Amino acid sequence: MSINKDFTSRLIIGVSLSLIGLFLCWYSWTTFFLVWSFFAVFAMKEYLKMVRDAGSRANFPAAFLMLLALMGTAVAAGRNHQIFNTIFAGFMLITAGLYSVYSKTGREKYNALFITGFGAMYIGGAMGCLISLRDFSDANIPGGFSGFSMFFMVPLVGAWASDTGAYLTGRFIGKDRFSQVSPNKTVEGVIGALFAGFTATVAFGEFAGFPRHLMLFLAVLIPAVSLCGDLFESAIKRRCMVKDSGAMLGAHGGVLDRFDSVFFSIPVTYFAVYFLHVYSYI
Image 1 (tube, rainbow, N blue to C red):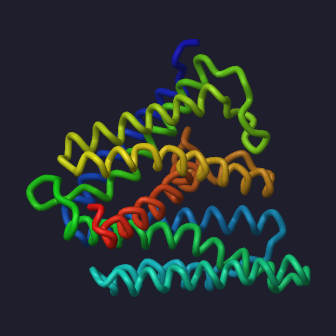
Image 2: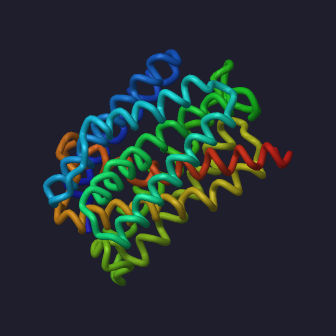
């Protein structure tokens, strides 16, 4: 099967966004924060619109306040990562508690609280972890260029390479359906995703001079959790009965469609690296 206009459009948008984003993230800490805040706000907007259209009574102001609170905590905590980690864990416990109460009582107000809190946790938590990952890696992980660690790029490179591998492999040789949650996903595409994600993560680590044993570990971990992130967002869209979360990025769909895998790969990478450092493995 030939590569069509859809793939060409995806490639142009993906490469353009990556280059612009990388430059702005490199330019200063402020531009780094503004870039990711921009994407976080639009991802949250898409999420809230989807769940609202599906009938859930999500609270827009509360969702954005919680989103900013998680990202702001990561900024304020700086390199005191215990503060951010504690608040992140607190948000997770509260969200899980709200879901537990709603699932037992069926009360709509608890459903609205859960939907709102979950959106903030899903998007704001990942963005907070990315901010903390940049601060943490700058201080604790050798490698990078001219004082710019670039380690925060690892979960992005691994996740997006995995997405690309899944798309191309599934398109050219995909036959066997992988999951009912996402009917277009194939077993062959999943294998391609794992291979592409592993290869890109290891290659990026070698290029940037990061510890090899750490990159091999992350090269196995990141593609797997990225696939989970992709399937998770597919499940949300299926529940809300929409094809794409939005249309902001053209052939890529919405911001949530483009970042679904990294919303899983970023927190997993951050906490994996953090605890490996705590226990002196890196």
